[in-house]
Length: 145
Image 1 (cartoon, one colour):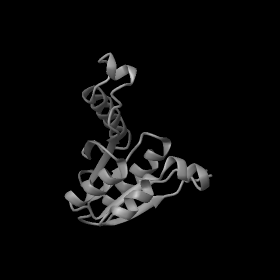
Image 2 (cartoon, one colour):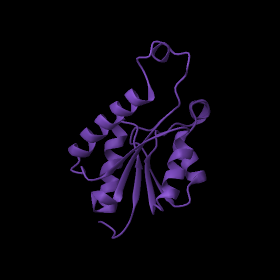
Image 3 (cartoon, rainbow, N blue to C red):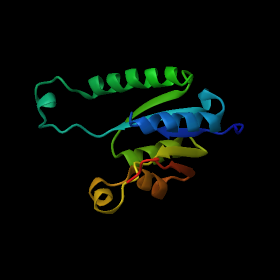
Image 4 (cartoon, one colour):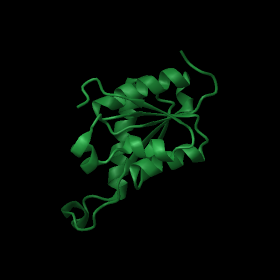
């Protein structure tokens, strides 16, 4: 079931749950051109070895993400989807991006953590829900803890 003129943002982290999120987002958007795949890279730690030796840069990271995104969109028949790489706090960047493009919906997978694990790891989905100005569909993992 596809809705007409619905702009959908699908944050992806390249986990197995990303596939389900892309399929769900595509089924809602109907047209891959109305789906925006977003991956957020956290800022580089300047003292990590890859950065110190110049092997890891924002450009090398962006190139790797774009390559993997292209493979994902091809796999799902969504090559015309908008692919975006952002830098910063994932929850805030996703919510801000959706606001800036006037998205109708964010479709985000949840890792299903709870208790201490959730407290320690944080929750991108929860942060998106708190800050997004559009509706958010959280896809629960079947094997959630």
